[in-house]
Image (cartoon, rainbow, N blue to C red; front, side, top):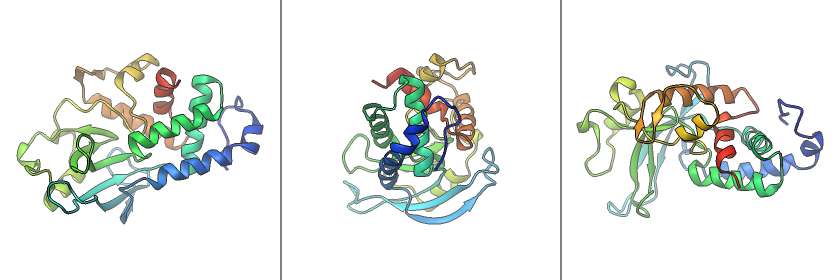
Length: 242
């Protein structure tokens, strides 16, 4: 069992309640739909050297328009149930000074709905975000949606070719537009959440979404990987957990 870095969480919580939170975290991670066919593990991805990033291929459900599944490829760095649980517990303790299930389970539910606790280091994430069963591809890098400069690399019919999938896996910041998506995995942390919690990097705003956000998210998630605290989750919890 993981232990909290800070002594403020009562020991009794780990004795009496933490295992139940771990079981809830397991349920969230069981929804990680991109964790299908394991291809390889690597610790040499630029910017992620030394971290056990795993490459998966996966199939979506049948697409609304094509009538068949679409194939995705993505590098993931997902937490274990224990790591996810301690991140959530500490976020609730930091934000609310409470470990009541009204907070811990609510935060886990939020993470489940936003990401299923999947952190895409690089690759394509298919989601039916706007139309049920219409599987649209989103390119991710460092846990954030990015946009490819070369429009010829974007699938016209929303189905990525094998060549496109491989390109997205090896793309760099030079291949993407200066403006990125708003939300950072795994809890949809925003630039505004970051700034409200003392963040000082020049990451822009929701209207000027600078690429520097990728570097900030990457470094905070890497820090969290070796910690019982995930500051990205704590930033979200401080502003939004009710």
